[in-house]
Image 1 (cartoon, rainbow, N blue to C red):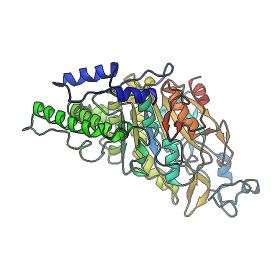
Image 2: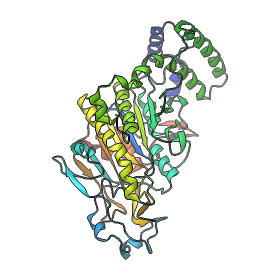
Image 3: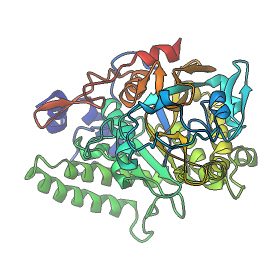
Image 4: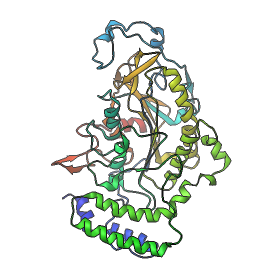
Length: 464
């Protein structure tokens, strides 16, 4: 039994005292008060960021059309791939008779740094001096499901915890009245809820899905005829039964999670209505996020909720934008999708900065892979995990810089290569967590997010 398991099982320590005080504020103690596994934890070293907002573009945005300009590729548009590139092992990519497709959007320089960003993102480009673009990301899978699994949990194997689960396991929650790990999507999650799963970690670290259409949280308002006192009595009785059931099944963490979630749901009835009430925001804020625009209102609402959650102590916020799988008509696909997210993401960065939250909030933008320089179908692009881009802002990093590079056509990451494991190690490092020490004993081995890989050297480059 490791230290965390011992504390969770024993029910002693300051976490239990804190949990007791919080429940006492609601009227009376629950029948079974135990150590709170989501109590704030001390980081391994001084953290630059307190929380993460992870913006994930499902389907795989093209690095060539977004943050990795390739003027040489433009010169070869429509030509066969040079012989020097055909020797590479590019899995499903047809290098024998594939024709190259030049960049479909021009690039402009932005800010004092002169960072080059595609015209797809004119508003995000206004934040160039706050962004660090990493042009040398890579991993091993060209299949959507496996690639999403790598980017969300560091491995192609199913059943492993996602980044948000590891972060909440390592740091706990800043809020006692809202979930520590929240996820939203404008459509559906690739791989379903597996992309926000706690895997083999205790179920309490599972991400909470907030809906983006209709009521974000179902059954939030209690029955008027029940009343808070009677509801508290009912919950105490349910917890007593659940605890008795749990004690007979000590290895099923879902029962601990259920007990904790009942208590959290009770407290959320006070905090969550204020969180999701966007009507209290000014017209200036609504305009900033594009809440009144037909194309931007959904993702704009997600980004505004992300800022409100950051203010209220939510530790890890996952925002998924769907539909970037451009096998055909890549220009049309990316243009339509970029219109949905450009203003909302820029608004989020602006709002976080204005409120003094950006320095302590790490914003990460990524997809599961990029798109191949070779044309597919009618001016589309295939999957491409061998070299693609992501960017980070906030969290103490110095923006206005480019890290790494792909070759002249955008096939391979060739300079300062950053594997998905390195990306995750960097995120943990900025949060004050040593990726090699954040472990959990499972099936006889101390497991970690970065498996047997990962380096946080990138963190030092982002900070310098």
